[in-house]
Image: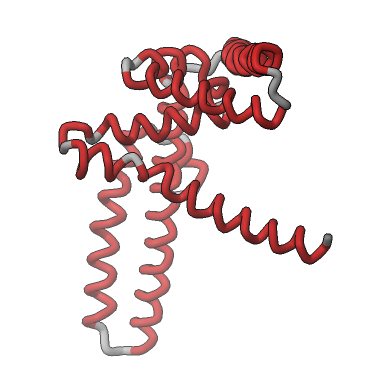
Length: 204
């Protein structure tokens, strides 16, 4: 069957055709194995190869039809709305951090570096509490990528991993699974800081 005719077939027709091609393939393989004459064996072998190519092409067409059907029922993402929400939520988190930073610096007379540490701890604690009560998940559904601001997103990832296994107990559940996300970050962060420190020492 020519490719143009295959492309015009419906999904059910392609499935039926694929079954016929597969059945024919089995017959050709058996016939090739039974024939002793070399010329006939070569002839059957060519037919087997052509049959395999036809089967692959039919499967490709079935795959295309599936992708088209999936794309037709998949809800379209509202790109601009999602961008606006992410910008709003991420901006509010960063604005909150800046407010805390300014307040600490003015109230306690700390330098920027010292105050930044307090801001980080504050954001992590608040995010952890909101995650524990399931509030941060709702914020994440609304804000999307805006909630993945490094500090709050990292805290949410750690607490979520621990909360998921809280039924297994404080030690084997929360205590162990809390490092599912934090462990690799701490490990590679430590290694990266050592490497950067060595480079800084050699260059300086």
